[in-house]
Structure formats: C-alpha cells, structure tokens
Length: 588
Image 1 (cartoon, rainbow, N blue to C red):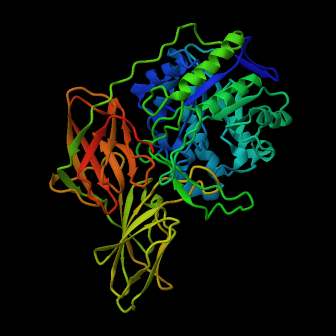
Image 2: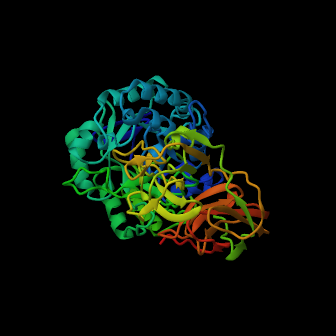
Image 3: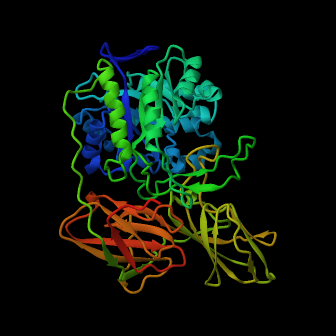
C-alpha cells in the first residue's frame, strides 16, 4: 500500500517518488489510450492522473452513460506499466463545461452546489454509488489494480469554506471502499489551503513556477505531509478570440527540475491535453484585478475545442518539444535517485507508432438540410435551456410585439451566450454576451425571433452553475411575453431531411470524404464564421474565425475506409462550401 510522511512516499515499504502526468480518458478516443499511455511511460513517468467528469456520465438525473470507460482506462494504464491517480470530483474545473457538474443539477440547486446542502449531497452520493465501485476494485494491492490515490473535490479553497461538505465527501469515499490515500489540491495560498484541506487527508498544491515558495507555504500548513505538486502547469489552455498560449520549453523543464530537487512528487498538467469534443469545452471569466471582486461583469471567455495545452504530447499524441526536455530531466533524476524513481514493472519503454496524417484535399458540401428543431414549447417568458431539458445546442425563441405599440428599442437581457436576431424574418443583428451590440428597434406587431447558442458553461470561479438561454426581452420598459421556444441538441448530428443544394447560414451542409486508408486528419472550414463540424455523425466541436484555432483535430478512429460524411452548421453570416483536410494543425 502507499504510505507517506514528511520525508516522502513509500509503496509497499519501499521509497517512491510519484512522477505523474495528466491525460484525461474523456479527451481522447478509447482506441488511442494505449498509445497515449505508452508515450507517458516512454517520457519516464510512472503514473497517470485523470479527472472524472460527472456531467459526461450522468447527463440526466439517474441516467448513467459510459461509466465503464474509467475502469477500462485504468486497466489500460496498468497494462502500459503505469500507476494511476483518480480525481472523481464531484467538481473538477478542468476547462470542462460547468466544471463537470451536471447542468440539470446546478440549475436546480443554484448556489447550493459544492456545499453541504442535502439536495446537492444526495445527488453526489447517488453518482458516487455507481461510479466508485470500479475505482475501489482497481486500487493498488488488489489483483490488476493500479490506483494509488483518490482526490477529495478539487481546488475547493478557491471556492468556499464548507468544511462539513469536504468531510462528507471524504467519509463517502471511505464508506464506498476507497482505502488508498485521499488528497486535496489547492493553490499555494494561505487562505486556499486553510479552506481546502481536510484533517487527516494529504494536502497538495497546484502551480506553474517558483516551486520552492509554493512548497514552503504547503509546509507551513502541513509539516507532516510530503511536498506534492498535483498540477504542474507546464502549458496553458486557449480561449476563442485570444492568443494561443505557449510556454518556453527550457523554462518549464527548469521548473520541473526544481520541483524534483525540492523533494517533490509531481503531476504534469497536462502531459497530454487532447480535445474538447462536442460541446464539452468550458468557459471562464477573466480574472478581475486583485483590487476588485467583480467577477460577474468580467469578460466571458469560452474555451477552444483544442485542449492541446502546449503539453509534452500534442493534441494527436506526438512528441512536442517539452517531451524530450522533460524526459531528460526525469532521466537525470532517475540516475541520481534510482531508489526513488521506481516503476510498476521493468519494461523498456518505447514511443508508440502513430497513425499517418491524411494528405491535403478538399471536400465539397453539396447537400443541405434545414435545422430540425424540436416541438415548440409555449411559455410566458423565454424558458432556459435547462428548463427545456437541453444541456447545449440551440434554442429558437419567437414572440410578437403587442400590435398597438409604437416603435421602441428592444433590449435582450441575460443572454448566454450568443444570439442571431430576426425582425419579421429579416436578420438584423448578432449579439454576444458581454459585448455591446447593435441598437434594435421594433414596432407594434413585429415578429421577434432569436436563435440562441450556448458556448460553454463557466468552469471556475463564482459563476460555476450558470444557466443558458436568455432571461427576457424588453420593448422599451415593457417585457415581451407569450414565447415559443424550439430546442435543438447538436451532439450527435441531429437527423434531418437532406437534399442537393447550396450551403447557407443556419442550415446544415454535408459532403462525402472517400478514403482508401484511414489516418489522423486536421480539418478546416475556409470562409466559415462560426459553427460546428461533424465527422460520421460525431461532433468534433466548434470552429470560430476569431481563432486562435483554425483546424479541428479528427482522430483516426472516427474515420473509415470508403465513404465518410462531413457535416457542418454555419451560424455566422457566411456560407462555407467546403471542408479542407490539412497536413498540420494550426492552433494560432
């Protein structure tokens, strides 16, 4: 079993330095797991860490999906010679929609999420009842087990201070058979560690630089715990409309070397980032200045489809510059401290072969379909996405201005996150949350229609748990009532009536890619504004001309020999007529 004290960890009585890398099973396809995990082992790591996104596995109350993927990933890690660290939430942040919390739950409990509120805890307990048995049976020491540690919540000290909530989670993990060490992780700040740590549970810290200072703060709070950087931020994620993030390789390698020299165990975040497929990407509010507490009105920043993270392994799993640099640092440490740099087995790791990249070509979009909205729901006010049973996608809201009204300004309130506005069937404006839009005016009897799109729920900070849609439309000071709302889920590709025709805005378009052999691909939508791209019915994610990301990664398992269907939905005012396959990624 794994034990620890202030001097470090011991596994089955022998000293161990945990050399871990984060790779999320839900950001890659299962067919890719062996190669990704083999590459981590080839970098010199002895452990892999993964979050568990609750909203992926319980998309509706009591409806559980894809639960076996976690266990299968843990089994594959063991086969590849890696121990594992599991971070089951219930909140994970992770630049993942709503921080992993189900939208149906946060819409119901609101600000009571991540507290000891009984309704919220009952939902957490029900999820853990079905999730945790596969973790418990794969703990180290059990046949085929690999799990060394399990996390209690995530960075809770950055959110609140409900000690009863953390205590409930820790007890719940133990009651459900988790016997390996539990841990928390927080920023290396006094107030975060004071609120986020749990008595009797290992405390770890997350940071990207200055490890000596971070470990000193941790030591003040937990002198009996070994230093552990649970998230070494060696890269960073991207937001639409913002520059692509990179970090100097030598700088990152130096910080890793200093973590190990300070006696620390480490988890590279990320070792391999992967992809925010579908509508899973989260969003953030820009951090306000430290002399301000106004998170509510700070800019909304949706996260890109790519989660490349400038990691040691790039989005398709190939070695990026940090791979060799980190491997060298770890090799030097292992040579100096062979008694600490231990591994699950003595195999000689090799970097795995990757699929070929498909050659450049174009796919014409020659069939179209109208958007197949669901049945209209009548409501006096615009119903939220969550009230319509929709996590993400589109809702078309329609109402009419009272007939005897004059021509007055229209004001759209509570928009989350983007809307195209029509008056009497004419497209008049595109509005985006937090961005001052065009001034709108409507007269009596005008038909008002808004096509509203969600762009990802906030995954960190006080806005976690937000709803999607809009809260109202005012005509001068008077709210418009009598709405019809038509929902449309986009993941997977909705069934539609296809026919030959030219592409256009707000209609589906598709074409066929013929392949003699499959491989990885990088897809682009030249001339597109913003929208969604599917491959064989699987939603790759969003594209957006604002960048920084231009290409979407399409992994080999989504393609097949013969005919492959590419479909897109353009929501801007463009009409892209083709999809391009390119031979290299463009992340900005």
